[in-house]
Image 1 (tube, each protein chain N blue to C red):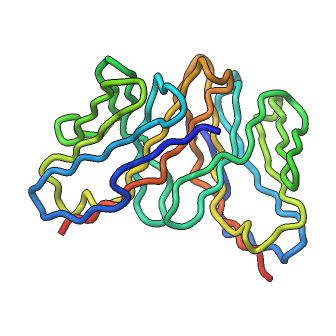
Image 2: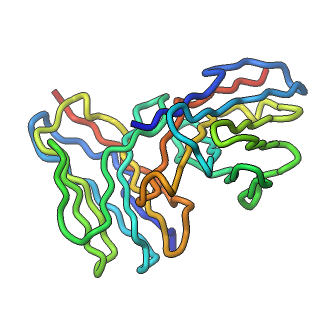
Length: 111
Length: 118
């Protein structure tokens, strides 16, 4: 079982819709969770981090964490074509500092 | 915000030569730096973790004698690809973290270096 799993996609949504990206992780004791966005040919950039159960909102982005289900998600409201990228879920497992990345989900927002 | 730079942004070299890539944290002291490699349409692959003043920890399958990592200061880490071959052509990305700076241990990525070995 992979430590951090994501659906590779591509996920295609129309402009203005809500894009929902999902991620599961295997280490139940993980404490820190991150979402990075990576445009083609560029390095990842941090969008959000979350470490408490529940929702965390930042502009059009909402991260959701459910530690009991070992599940973290990212919602993008009012999706724009500029949101088209690969979204990487990342987790720092128990007692560690090394970040474990998922393989990423490719998102296409159609104009 | 935390800014990490890499130099060069791209490099083309002949097979058999060595290439050095620099990673700098510009506005914070990075106690830990990570080196990743990413092939086209694939995910990030962690190569090694380096802590200032100590030897790097390499991931399984990564040749430490081929990919030399030096983390001589809290703001600079270098990756040297020795005797590069065409299969080493990839996108190399560094990231920096400073646990004392932020309790979430997020990593800040450099812009990456695209290496092409002819």
